[in-house]
Length: 399
Image 1 (cartoon, rainbow, N blue to C red):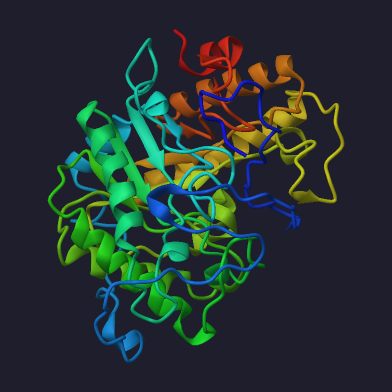
Image 2: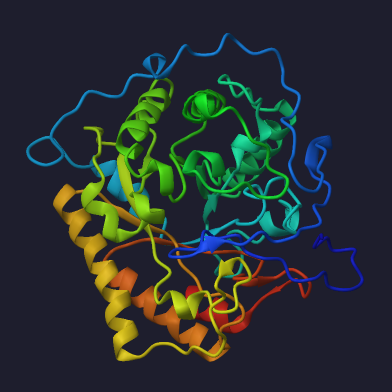
């Protein structure tokens, strides 16, 4: 399924493959379309892409030591002033979702078209973009996880196009299903469990090296929505990854979120290394029965017809934002809401009410945000009509 401009008729709706909080991922049959840079895509299990000659794999996690521990609060802790300025400056952003976070670009119906990139900064639209990338499916299956050169170049080209438009870009590592202990998506390949964590760190070593010469408008996010098997491992692995990043990017802003799919409820369990260029992030999809009604990947499927926003729903929404704001204040770090949104099957008037309430509440708490997402099931942009969906756009980006 593609959404290229030359199609005469709209494609079948594509699913937004958001992790189902409090639910499991359904196995959705997908016809996987061709991808960029000559990569092959097939139904079912995939095989690792051919890779350039790789260095000898790490002997183990000892090759990636964590940062030294230190106090999170108190004199000399918290984020540097420049980090506050940069993260708060993200303002009202957008996720370029269902593009590079698919098993292959195009597999979930979207590609990084110039059409999308050229929207950034135009007509009141944002200049802040979160770019999710499933790096793990474009790398060798061994511990070295050598990233396919064509895939790296494709992401790099998109990042550079966005930066050239004056955008701030948050580049992450997204949907490494085996890392979380989740079932694989169609088109995703399995690796030896012994190298899963080593691959995560090796991926960051390459990403950090490749993008080290970009300016501060490029920021990194260590991992999207850690959960599952990562619950007891996350603080250790994020510290190791941050040390890898700092070898070539000593002052680049790095964004880190808690477990439970970046839930504010898990913030008390998040331990940050003493790094003054780290910012915080949470995701927020409550009330879930409203935001994910009719979502095909949530099982059991949430029934249609749920409205928003009752006093009880508002209380739930605001309580989570208050948790995040209190944690940010305690740690003296900026807090980004990296994802929120309501699926297209929710009633439009309630979607608008939800977006207006969320936008107002986040901004009242000095939380910049990234809406999920641009042009698929949650999308603010209609790729077939080639225009913004006016009610959603006004609720998010209007005056």
